[in-house]
Length: 356
Ligand code: NAP
Image (cartoon, rainbow, N blue to C red):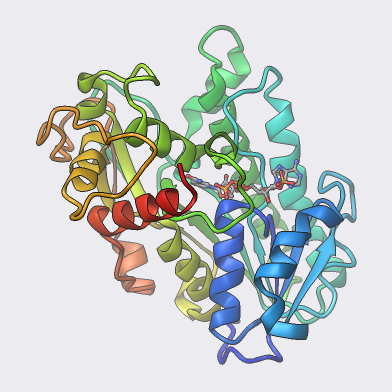
């Protein structure tokens, strides 16, 4: 199935959610590798930081404003003349009352993008969708290992029943699961008439340095906000040593995930597959230990806590661990992932440079 062969200025990629934590790293990676990029944002002012950051690329980088991705035909203009699409935009918060505040933009935005490509993306060869391991996992008292055959039916059951089990992260998981299910339904219904193909990437927690427009720690995206809260401020966040030593799962550095987004355009074998992008297992204490091993220590607004050194050690048998098989990503992408130590050093250097 089609894949982009040689990145050059004539290869243009539409990136939705381009002003977000992951989106801007995807834009940067593509530009650095020679692609032209059309960054889609919700409003003119949301493109300002991107314009400034990538001004040096001249007309190889452009902004398109798509005010409401839930509207039919929202991406009709944006997909014209591009060779590929990276659809990353989706709401990421656990703090909503109505689950459809997440589900509607996640599903309609994704299906809408696919229909726009079907109708107007005459030069498109690949569409990469950023799903999540939220669409793969389920909570269970026993440690479980997941792969691409697993689907998060559990969150859909809880969504259907409503009630107290329908907490924030379940609503988010439902939005990602329904959006990804809609992708594969579209694929089944339309594969006979489309000349392009689809790749779905399923990352777990994504950490790494922030390059999008963030004025204060509270404005960080959800995953790095949690990282900042539990590594820099665990005491004030109410996290106990036991919490830090037992909570964790899978993770990937945002720069590796951005590279996976680029490779998903280029690797023929990625076509028509969902692919878990996971660097390994972690617990908060592992990041805390890595933070305290940095020499000289980063100059943050307050000294780093220590927690209970060594208590994490990423034991997959511990409760609350989600473990993922990564053979498919290894075979298709062969990524060399950042380590916990490398990502921790770069995140803390980023916080230090911002005076946090
Ligand atoms: P983020 O920084 O919050 O970025 C989200 C992006 O989506 C922003 O550009 C945002 O635009 C856009 N967006 C959100 N709601 C929208 C809506 N209703 N209409 C149009 N655009 C909307 O989050 P992120 O961490 O980079 O996440 C990006 C993608 O990766 C999401 O699909 C998420 O599910 C997936 N993902 C993230 C993680 C993680 O740990 N971070 C893990 C797995 C998967 P505005 O700035 O205008 O709101």
